[in-house]
Image (cartoon, rainbow, N blue to C red; front, top):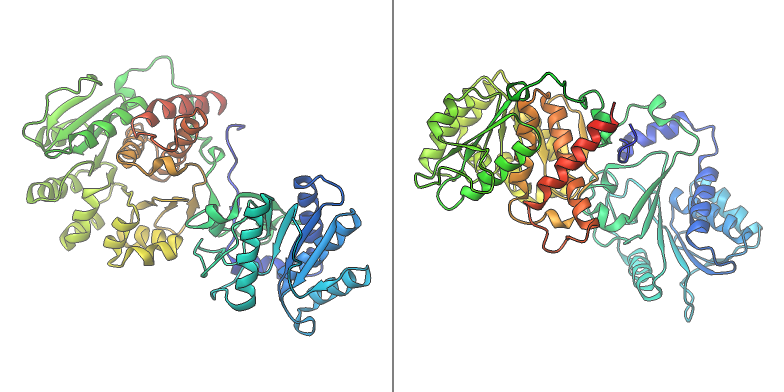
Length: 500
C-alpha cells in the first residue's frame, strides 16, 4: 500500500519509560541529540547561523546539550541557555552537559539580547510534564515563541513542545509553539490530538535505532490506509446494486431535512447500492432534486425497508417522536450508527442506553466533544482535557465503536484499542460535515465492512477529503460540507485501485 501516510505506533509516557528501561544499555541520549542536530542542520543550511538552544533541568536538557555540541562542530553559532542546576541533572544529562562545556560550549543564564536567530531549539521539558510551566521556565517559553515569530525562524521542539502533555494533547499552562517537533523512539498521542497539532508543527520521528514495537506493545496507532488493505478490494464485474448494501438514514425533522440529505448523498457516493432516507418532517419533499437516486420515505417505511445498515441522528430533533423512532431503530438487528440528535436523546434517557446495551448487532457512536460530555455526564472541558480517555470510556460504557470528533479525532473500540486520526483541517469546522461523515460510515457498514474498519476508513477519508479541497484552493475558510463528498469518492476509488 503506497497511498497516504502509513499508520504509526503511538506510546504514552509510561510505555516509553518501559522501552527506555529495556534499552538502558544503549546510548539513547547521544542518538537523540545527533538526530536533532541533523534535523536542525537540514532546516537551517546557512553556515555560521546563530542558533538559540534552551536546555532544561532533565533528560530533555541532556538531549539539547548533545544537539548543541554537534551543531557547534558543524560551525553554527550556538547560544545555549541552561534553565536548571548542573548538580541536580540526571546522570546522562550531566555527562552530556560536561562534554558540551569541555568542548568549549558555554552555559548562559539568559537569552543574549540584540541577536537575530536563524533557529530556536526547545529542550526545556520533554514527555511526562504534569504541572503548568511558570517562573523562569515560563519566561523562556514566552521568549522563544516571541523571538521565533519576530525572526520568522524555525522553532524545533525536542521530543515534545515544552508545556504540552504528550499523552493527551492538553496544554500545561503556556507551551512552546513549534514549527517542527522531532519525537524520539516513537510518536506520542498528544502530538496529534487536542492542542498538539497547533503546537507541534511538522512532526518527525527518530527511532534511535530501536524497534519499540518489538519491546513494548504500542499504546495506540495513528490512522493510515495500510490498516484497511484487507478491505480495499475492487468490485467483481458480475455484481448488482443489491451486492453493495442498502443504507438507511433516519432524521430530517422540520427545518433540518438538509442534514439527512447530506448524509444520504455521502452514503450514495461512497458506494452503497441503495440509500433510503426516513424523514421525520411531515412536509418533507418526496425527492431530493440534486440527488434523485435517494429513496425518500416516512420513518415507518424506512424501518421496514430491507436495510443492511442504519444511521440515526442527522437533523433528527429531540422531541417525543424522535425518541420513539430511535427506540425502534435500536431494536433492529443490523449495524447502527448514532450521531447528532440521536446521541443527545441517548444521553438524556437512561432507558435508551439499556436498549443500546441489549443490542447484538454492532453499535457505533460519533459524538463531538459536547455530545460526548453529555453521554459521560461531564463538561466539555473535562472531555477535551483527556480526549483518549473520554473516547475509551464511551466505547466501554456503550459497548460501541466510537469516534470522538475534533482536532485529532480518536477512534476507540470497547476492547480498549484506539487510534488517532491525523488527516483533516479547520475547514471541517462548519455545519454539515458531521452529517457527511455519518453518510460515509453507514455506506461502508451497508457494504459489509466490520464496524471498526468502517469507522477508521470513514474518519480518515473524511479528513483527507478536506485536505484535498484545501490543497485545491477551496478552503479551509469557506469550505462547505457538500464539497467533501466528491473528493472522498475520488480518494476512495484511488485507495481501492492502489490497494490491490
